[in-house]
Image (cartoon, rainbow, N blue to C red):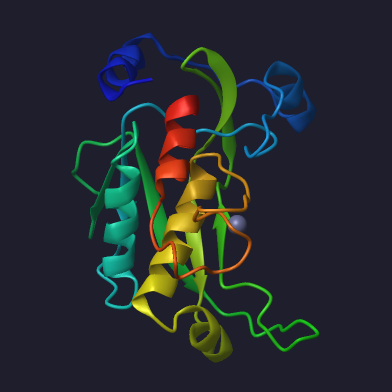
Length: 200
Ligand SMILES: [Zn+2]
């Protein structure tokens, strides 16, 4: 769907919080390959990535937002989204987890959580929408060494986690949604944007 149509559709969007079981979400909207299950989407309208002004990740968050904004999504990045006209805010926070796997790598570099989810009718389908989308970045020393070793690595991480917010699950190929950091694709690729446009 094109951006203009998405924006116009906002006024007709029904917001109804009812269902609590994920099974119902699956029944109403069977998960398509490559999309999260239960089906998740961002709400219609401007999505604001709140960088918080962090020097380490700020530029990466800005770059991730700019690339997603080239799809039919409307995405901006601001130091603070407060006071900016938007439909949703994605926050970025720090956590510390030094847990390693058998090969000595940290088990997670960053994670995405939607917090509580609301069941909404968007763009002709019923879907889950995150109430408090949050990207958490692991600042444990080993994690920063293994995951934030370059601008491309950090940007790939931010593009990937925010891709989860839009409903993308892991994928292979020319994509930011690979299961490991891939500095070859710092921001959403043509393939990623095509998939977004096919859904939104
Ligand atoms: Zn992931």
